[in-house]
Length: 185
Image 1 (cartoon, rainbow, N blue to C red):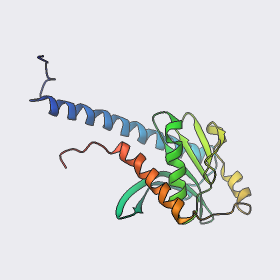
Image 2 (image 1 turned 45 degrees about the vertical axis):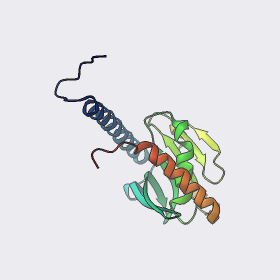
Image 3 (image 1 turned 30 degrees about the vertical axis):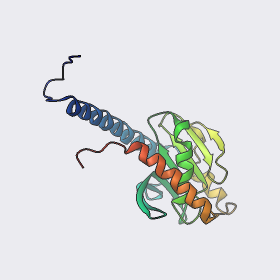
């Protein structure tokens, strides 16, 4: 079957790679805008200061003989403790719940109490210890005042090593889904 290539391309593989890269770039730009909107929301509506919001927290994940990098979109800290991990998404929020929980369980030596998945329009708030949905909706994201009231009552639990290994593998599987295409590397 004869097909017509888009202008400027010599072969089908080159055209497909360029189109896929264009789609990935568009999704990454959309994700960047979601992160900006969430940061603004946290400061203006939820009372956090810029210094309490850490963006694009990259961290190393060691599992077996593998050493990989992963990233948390936003982490909220108060009084030196990380309380909320936020995973931004441009797709179905439920598809990223497990990734957010796994990240919240392995990012620090203790489990971050709350994980949030959001697209800047809606949000799912999860209990990182149980993985259960606590609340839904943007207004349900804990405010600074709410977290400050909880400081004394939250126990920051360490994840057992065998469970941490499983969570790392889950996190890396989600990260691999995003990074399956390489460009000439």
